[in-house]
Length: 240
Image 1 (cartoon, rainbow, N blue to C red):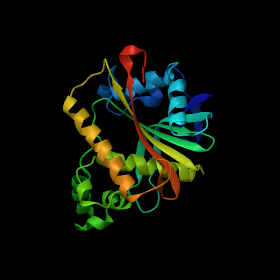
Image 2: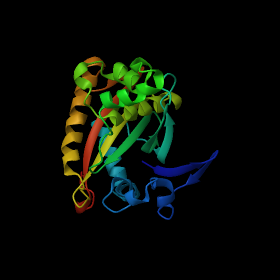
Image 3: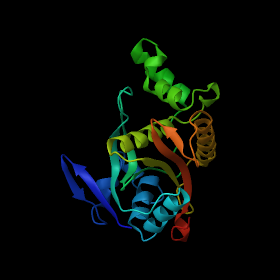
Image 4: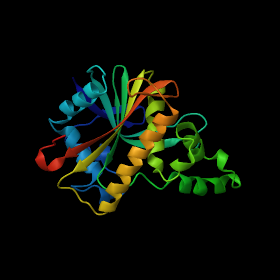
């Protein structure tokens, strides 16, 4: 398996290596670009010898053949028609032969606000008509359940963006992959870790309830999608 990295600059793809990692990965808030924070830990992990075996394990666990990937850090992606404003960033987008992997990295950052709260925020732009908001449409498409209102909004946007990337790149299958870094990381808000775990479990169960597929795949917008979460321990040379 070969994994290469690039950064889009206009219409050009600039190769990314260990010398220009920060250019590709650094978030807008420079305070987030620190050891123990998710953005920097993801860049270090992706540059390590452990990353290819990790992706190989993910593919094997999902019964997907091993393949090469081109990867874009901080990839800016559309959510597609009907989800305006429809742009969000993957922490890392991996484009393979027949598979897309959209990676979201976490230490103790939340999955954004509760989706019901986001609906309330967005509906102000539409004369309080919540049905016109992006958040409402995502919730109705993925988890049309009153009990889903407390789930973090980013799980919805990350899943939709991953599937739409598969649509755009004409790939049959995709994985929305959450990587949680543990060990020697900055747990500024450890309570968020507990909330994130509950959000992820609730989200996956809800999607499974309404979007049934085969062999742990969900049928989302006519694509086969897996929703997975792995822990990676940075204290022990990236054990997973």
